[in-house]
Length: 87
Image (cartoon, rainbow, N blue to C red; front, side, top):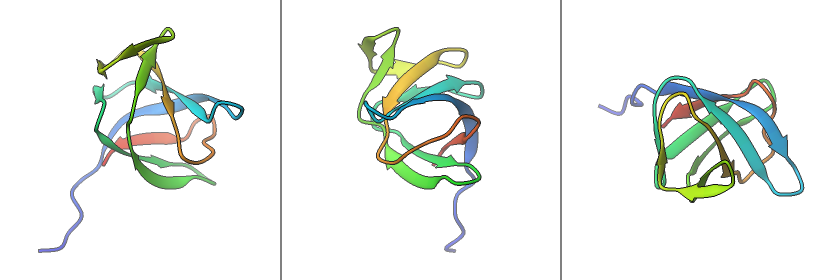
């Protein structure tokens, strides 16, 4: 069975700092941990990457729960309202 596992919506992009390649994610549907694989998808965005680091209020953390706003380093440009899925 080669069906892709069901992706779970965990948040959305609220801002992108192009000079830092950092996306700001509002976690609305689950937690995010260092090492997780995420899929960022939007009108002009579609890529999967692993989470190497997470920051909450400029402090490095290993995980963040639903309701938090976090910054992560992204490998490609992301845009406001892009959706973030647990891959």
